Length: 187
Image 1 (cartoon, rainbow, N blue to C red):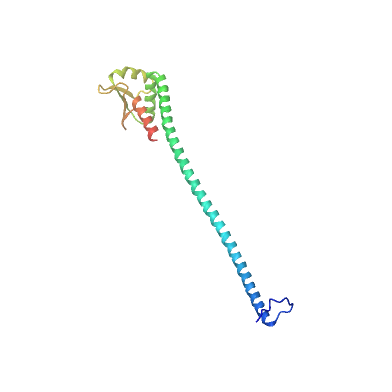
Image 2 (image 1 turned 30 degrees about the horizontal axis):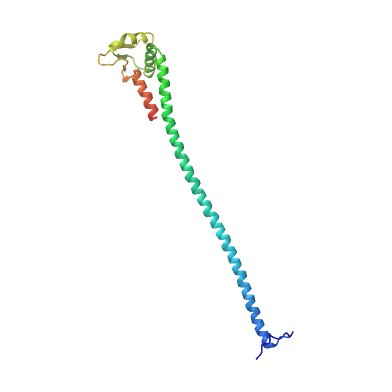
């Protein structure tokens, strides 16, 4: 049997028409499959692009957070370094200020400040070293009539203890500086 397609007739024999029709259905199904595959590919490509963008964005956020944490750590170190520098400057400044004051004036200010903290006390006694008694008497001569000076041979020069009915407080320059240093160091 010879194939009907080999001839170049314009008329398609009936037995060949079925084959052509079947080929047309196969071709149409292949086109639909190709279109569906292309649509699936487009969706998958879009999804992959979104996933890639999201993954890249998330990685960027992680990298930025790591850089921020490193910057914060460095800033904290710089601030800690600055704290010690400020402490040194403050202590040096206090030393210069106190060093420029006469001993009588320093004592007068220390006693005035301490008395202002104990305004309700009836009697105030200052315990001092024997060598400091005359200087302290001069320094507080015009401050308050309630103050008495008592010498204590066990005390060191510059040491002053304020005694009231409320209790005893060390108010000497060394003690005041120790309080300032403690406040600077421990806030």
